[in-house]
Amino acid sequence: MSSDVSVSPQHKSAQARVQWVLRFMFGTAFGVLVGLAGVVWWWYDPLPKITEQRLQQAERKWLSKDQEDYTCQINLTGSQTATYFVQVKDGQPVAVTNEVGRELPRRTWDAWTIPGLFENMARELESCLEAESPLGTTGEASVLLRAAFDPEWGFPVRYRRAVLGSDITIAWKISDFQPASGTETLVTKSQADQADSPPNPAD
Image (cartoon, rainbow, N blue to C red):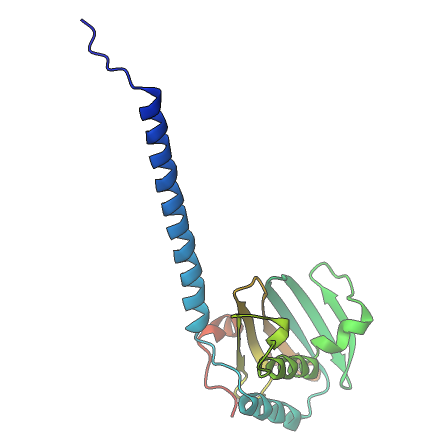
């Protein structure tokens, strides 16, 4: 005698619906957890938040060094990834190339100098202080700006910007900074990598 038990099409259909609902619930829960992890990571980022006072103090320290000849490497991550090599002479950029040696458009060179980075950070901070639409965002989006500055020279070592509720993210770090007139490396790659737990910010 056969012991096989036939399963009706209705029962199979009900099982399929239950499996679909379970997969949907687990998928949704996983997505929520990933989103929450991202929010927690940005909110509890060890980099200090940028304030007008910190930014102005760091820029004054940089200007006080009167360092107009230097080279640096800037690594971009986030929505845009790239590596830029910047050479400055007499306070003016003379070359800005990417990781394959191709020059960037000359109209963009100033933005990748140290003063240009300060200017962009100040502009984004000012936009974030606008109540209605920081950095062009609307609704419940929140903008987080964080940075670490070299404690002796004042230039920004690392910068991060995130717009919660959107995919607008950008981060960059100066992984190698050298004055053209000397051989001492002011910021090494290993030091820049450690800027997630930065030294005391520039005062």
